[in-house]
Amino acid sequence: MPELPEVETIRRELEREVVGRKIKSVDVNGLRSIRRHGRKKKEFVDRLVGSKIKTVGRKGKYLLLGLDTGDVLVIHLGMSGQLRKAAAKDETAKHTHVVIAFTQGGEIRFIDPRTFGELFVSTAEDLASVEELAELGVDPVEEPISWQTFGRMLHSHRMKLKSFLMDQSIIAGIGNIYSDEILFQSGLRYDRMSDTLSTMEIRRLYRAVVETLHDAVKYGGSTLEDAGYVDLFGKPGEFQSHHEVYNRWKAPCRRCRTPINKTKFQGRTSFFCGQCQI
Image: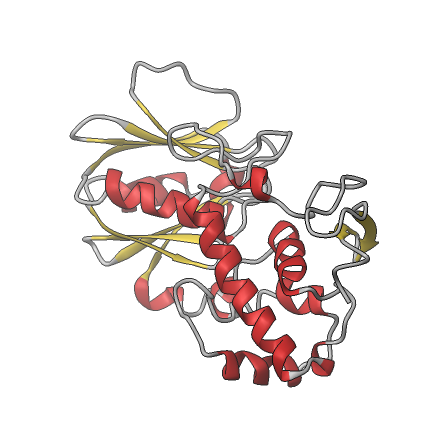
């Protein structure tokens, strides 16, 4: 699933490519991708056609395209969703469910093999009552907080650290890949309890959250073997080349040369160094 760095990469590209563009037409092939509108495909299309994109924002893993009508187009990539820029003459890829064409030319296509992603249109006022968005916690890239505030958050929850990092109601946007990378950078195990960290450990973890996410955005996110994530232009991310532990089972730790370990944690495969992380 695309996490914060991948979604932020796409947000920045959309900001450059579609802001100021007017929507000419919308083609929906598969109602599951707009399921929040029920079977009202016309309602979804009519609220988009003729409007101009003014802003491209993000909250956690959700993209928020502000329109000049006051509405917001919300896009969630789900497990396998991609947004791709294309020309009208380009061949349509399999699993293309929504195509947004612009009066100035060009299209944005939503491709989603597993159909867990979705698009929906909301008023700005109603957006605050959308449960998934309303319950999101702090965004560590868009809403930087102090390490002291971060420490209070840690100590107010008695949770294993990986659970804490991946809890979207506490911190929005971190998933399986980046929680493992953050914990390695901070030298902390996935199963340490959040309320047991010393001041020094809190500061290390805080710094690892900020630096890991910003570095991942700088490299365009992570693309794994399934090539499930690519950016708006079909280019894979490069941060996977900088992974220290994720998907590096049995490879030597780049710090201590101990083979990277893996375990099942809450149904996810987690990677860590048994020597460097305590």
